[in-house]
Length: 507
RNA sequence: CGGGGUGUAGCGCAGCCUGGUAGCGCGCUUGGUUCGGGACCAAGAAGUCGAGGGUUCAAAUCCCUCCGCCCCGACCA
Image (cartoon, rainbow, N blue to C red; front, side, top):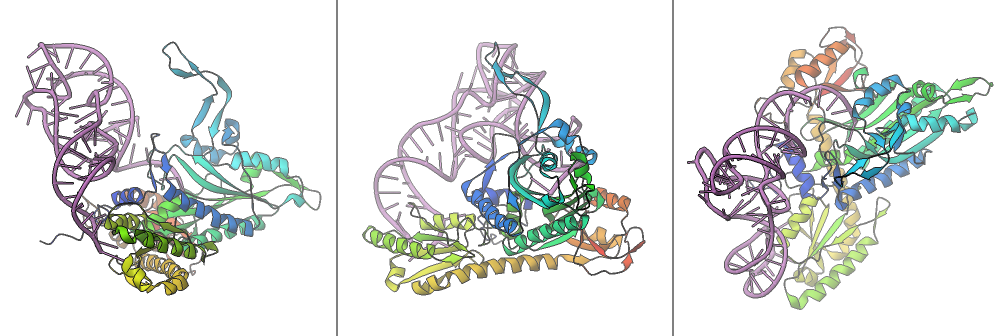
């Protein structure tokens, strides 16, 4: 029996997808678990992904008229109590600060001493505290719309955590806006959802479905919640971003009132929307393979690595000099409005080991340069989206001329690959039996990758929705916004339905 | 919070059943040979065996208590 091909990551996706994911994150040096339960340390290679995400999204938020601000980490308990549904949704996962001082006791142990009059909640989201400030800032219709965003950390005390996908503390961005009319607020909700969808597809190379959440999946306190849903390589759905139309629920709770042009007092209409470091987990699961990370060039921590081949002492200086000059020339190039980023790996050590190191880190392009290449004034290039053996020699001048378009080719090939994968695993399903078959693995002991997105008619029956979630762990991910209206009958209740919704297992 | 598992060197593990004072692989350090795709040889550093208590001449090993972590479930971006 032949051995299976050696892979840098073990287990492979097919063998054990969740474990593969953890190993890819670790081997790619993105993040690791911290001494604090459920919290992660994001390492430099992973954090630069977040910096790139921030940079691009910030530009998109500014372009749509938003401004950044910062609100406190601590929220008075009483603020959270103001909106009934909101309380219910978040109370169970709040971290609470009750003391403000530590003292040494007789055993030389630090113990909390000064009890707070009112406990402070570490923000699980900031609607209430931002609402309190909005109430002060808004008096007139001339103060509207108010379009604010903040980059912040959030704490939600989750039972189970996974690196990037669900951690106790995570980084995110939350936009909060207030408007004079319902129509304007609804428009904003949709606008930002589209910003997220564009970002996911154009930058993360991750195709998404935009849709509205059912009541069961709605943000606590929202009138309507919308999301972008992406399919991971194990065919499960990842909610990658949300946008909420909050109606007047929070403006009533926080008394965000204004005088309209007719001099009449009205409650403002608000929205909120966010994406988090979860996006990084999504990017990993959308593109990486059994040899580790594959990063989309537009967000990659770096674009190119140059690996000088330095075996012979005699030519060492010459090789390094050549590589330095090439690195400088490549850095002067522009990709997607940013300078091309180049890593020059001059570490000691065997070439093969270093090469695999960069494969696992997912860098889009590797260049190996030794005396033979220099003699020919060419470099040996390998693309992370192609097989590792597929190495091409490119004349140096041509490399410099075509590097940017190569990066863009990789970006597009990743998007195409992800789109094909999603489309191949998205199916119209017209009976409950077929749905059960679709989401039932062949091997119940050790479920293989199965299922996908099932497009089914559903007439809005919450009981049927809850039942399928309980029986199979399958939920309605969203009611797609861009699908064609199509009359049909609910696969559970046989009631008339106007359009299909997306059923899937989810993260 | 319920069910299951696990804790021994930086990481991954063996040793425990049948007590005798610490071992393997990877990594790390040093030297050498190698080197155009995951090298090899040699020497070395590194562990209060999760914590506390008990039994014993003797405990990683047996007994009791506590703690951490992981997986499954309920909850979630």
